[in-house]
Length: 442
Image 1 (cartoon, one colour):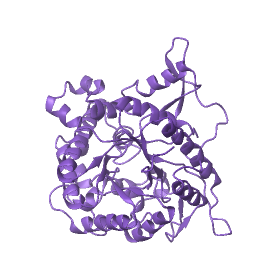
Image 2 (image 1 turned 120 degrees about the vertical axis):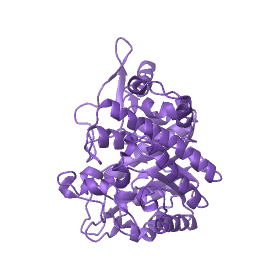
Image 3 (image 1 turned 90 degrees about the vertical axis):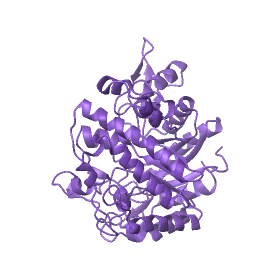
Image 4 (image 1 turned 45 degrees about the horizontal axis):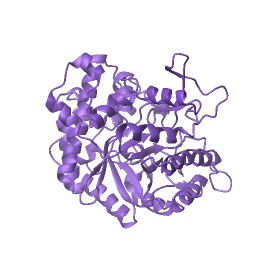
């Protein structure tokens, strides 16, 4: 049974939906530059217009009102607020997000603001970006501005979304902006500076915002046992927190939640200063997890975990991600056990080959069944007393899906990218009924 104050929401990100790339004093981000380079995104797609939510945000809030959600997770574009990355504040940018927050509150929807969802100010990238030792101070200044200028309206904050992606894909493999392929020592500097930035941001927000609530949107590898045997459950738990590499939970979460500095960074950077550890371990108030699928883990004859796989013909989404409905149950259980804090699913959803049919509607039965199964798993966790505090469906709208361009549709609402017309899908009605019943219909 979900709590009476359970958070039901949807989620988006600025560069994926806003458009208005040169409007309102906004300056380019690394994704603006990257997406305009030939061959970096599918079919040369960019976020120049995206869903045009910069101009149609009232329409989008009205869609959320129809869904009945009580929260909206969106991201603030750093370069809309501080066009030079630091220093002078752009009043048009502040006014835009304040207006959005005011409209949300007027409609009974709590704003959850992500401060960084991958659109790094290009001007700061030219100064070294996450490699620059001052980068955490830049981010701390940005968080301070957001807190001072918007903290009367916004109380819930997530400093970072998926550093595994913007560092791992953006700075290690080069498949995302800014398209770098750095070696391990340089990657370690980036990771260290992001961890410092997270701590500085939480400090700034708590100092400026009365009643600030902070979290972290992690997307580290998640595990579920192949069977319900005690051996497989232990193996899945061990696998989920066993490694300390780029995509492992321990690398990012143990420093901020447990104050344990990663051994992989010690190997390349040496022991951190006591002050750095103190900043990094500025503990968030909840554990956030972006989860779309999970590995199935079993115990070998030696008791050690191994990836047992999903088997041939396993159901997959259009992203070729396995459909594993029990993943929300096991992720919530394991994360709550380890970090002793409420768990919020900060993203969950599926990409589907959605079309508008001759009746003018979008009948996405696959997404309905995906949501039904995954939310049932989360409900099971809540019923067992696991501290599950909220769920954000990804995404409100079909949008710019990074290197995949506009070919992956995750939304509850279909977007015609030629006209930006919005059409709620069948899954929007299903999710609205789930929200209205607080999960009772599952």
